[in-house]
Image 1 (tube, rainbow, N blue to C red):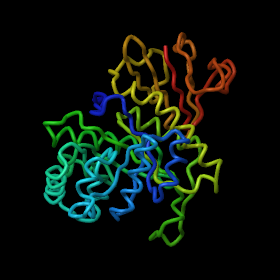
Image 2: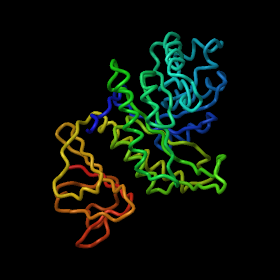
Image 3: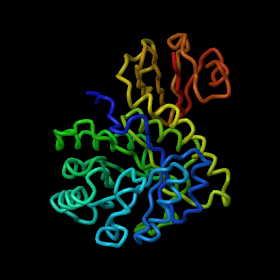
Length: 333
């Protein structure tokens, strides 16, 4: 059974964020790239204050740990920082930090700063069935390239939403933020005798982004930031996606589910959103094979974020159009 669209609980703000920011100078790069928030692992209150000051100047939101801030001279000032959410914990299920301990930490942070939100990240959606009652927002990180099928990400987002809905009856619309892969696994230690890894392609990054949105993610984070000037081609992948998500995300977050158009191949993953009399549709090919696309079934729909206006110009196949593996189409009526 399909889940309803997730509530944002944040007006029209739809988080499109980058993980791993360390310096205030990096925030201008994010802003120019179309992002509206960032996550940092920086623990020092003084350095967080510098990030917060620059974030405020650039109208960016931040996600940061409250651990060292609590009890510090900056404790009072931090309540006015542009915080999207205080980052309670990183993958508690992996580090054996119990649900009760996480709930207590959440309570402690809320007692200190009731107006600011809290969040934490899990390494898989199943963990939400144990931890989903805590915090104002749930995050799930899932990095499948190259060893897992990309569509496994969708299951993790769905499980995370289900866990939050099951355990937190007071906040059934609690947002889930998807943390998506923007790195090469070869950059990290592995237990495998033969190490594997590569950076996601533009097509894979776009597929993961739209699969998350189709499954109800109320924000997307990319893990993690690296020097944009060192690899402008890779940076362009994520700035292009940031522009698309910032335009589309808030509309999807407010939308209601729509009916799947008749006549489309059942192998296609299709999600329809209705909002203010308009409809948007996300069409994904979640397989390694080409899947036929019946253009007649999409008569009246207009492609978004494409260089061509007509499906016949966008897709291969001539009179027998098909969607290549992991291709994404976003259309509106």
